[in-house]
Length: 73
Image 1 (tube, rainbow, N blue to C red):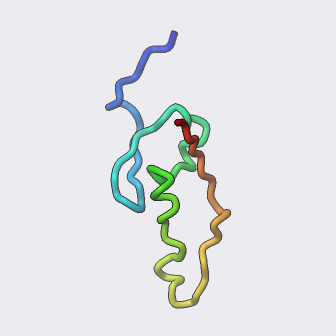
Image 2 (image 1 turned 180 degrees about the vertical axis):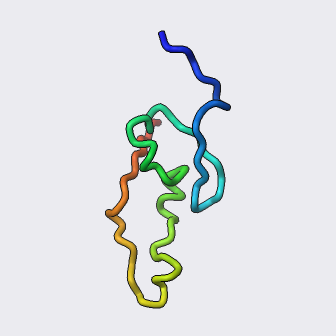
């Protein structure tokens, strides 16, 4: 059996929308590098344009990233 890791040893990222830190989860094991947002709410509230592109009217392609969230109830 594998040795358990304490929560303080898990990798942490900062959510670009809310600025809160969030830790690695087992369900993100295969896609941790692609995970950007801490929650579905922050993913929905992400900025739709980049600041330097706001003047040109260009919109960021919403299909250019991978989201790996599993909803469990």
